[in-house]
Length: 192
Image 1 (cartoon, rainbow, N blue to C red):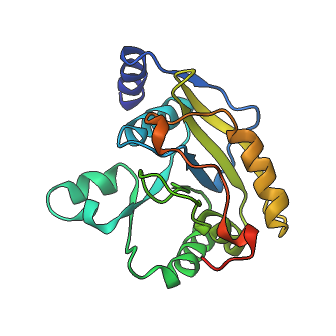
Image 2 (image 1 turned 180 degrees about the horizontal axis):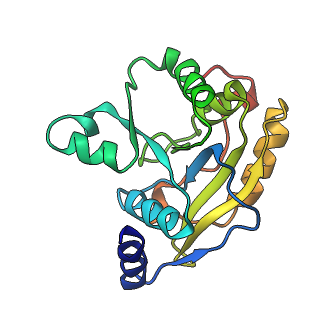
């Protein structure tokens, strides 16, 4: 029933789902980009549902308070305390170790606002958990979304980010002014 609803919702908004070139692994960290609007979230949920990919996603803890908390958890949400990110990578790596299937969506920009750099958490979580990274997208210019390459972190951050940059080149978020080039502070030798 939810899949039919997702298909109808995407059709009403005239969005199409592009089938992935390779299967989405059962366990992976999935980049959600460009992340420029609150509408990215329902689009991503619908695209995943139509594609048969069961996702979990990170959200700020405020989303999980009050009456919306159970709804957000039912939609696959995992609460994260952004004021204390130090233990998040280890905790999520443990979660991957405890489960056979976990597709964890991480908005690499970390915010819907314009930023200079992506957050590197998606990469650090994948490295620590020993799982691949999958690039997911919504693209306003083509009114399409889907899943891109599956990338195993090689340890060569710049080379891996070059693959990611190449994939996201030309993809525009719902609010074009809010997008950010995929780059990490660590690539430039700066601390995050």
